[in-house]
Length: 231
Image (cartoon, rainbow, N blue to C red; front, side, top):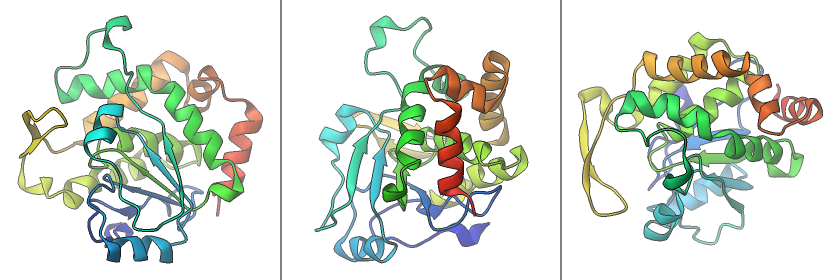
């Protein structure tokens, strides 16, 4: 699956999310943010036919690190995975990586529903879905979409773990500075993380489609996105 990677200068961890389940290649890409996209990278995105960029980051991240366009005329949608207001939550903000992967599906429903609705539109494709580095928030979003298109958990996990290679985390944790200027540690992802997200969804809702129904999507919405993304 390493052939999924595509070199886009200035963008980390860019790859095709298709080729597993019924999800066809060339319609759904995943990556880190486009805030350091170069002019050459923009030309390569144009060659891919890019029409839509879905940004899963927080408003603060967008303000500190806005995506670059270099003349690209794609539609940009801001659909943050995580809730903006931490004061109204019914569980603590995640303190570690393991907590994050059960926290995200508990609050990502509105974002995921909006992503599915946009992907159901034929004029949206091809789409790039990204967060900061394309690992956690993007990992959950793509896993849900791949599951919806019939991918096995094993194939979803194999694609998920490619972010370690795409980000150099296969060599271990690396430091980074977040949007507030605080130095943090980016840690490798593992099989248990995405398994815990999928288990949370199935425990609380029964299945990925039922989870998306609870987020407000209809059977027609799910049929439309399957038809639009299927090989």
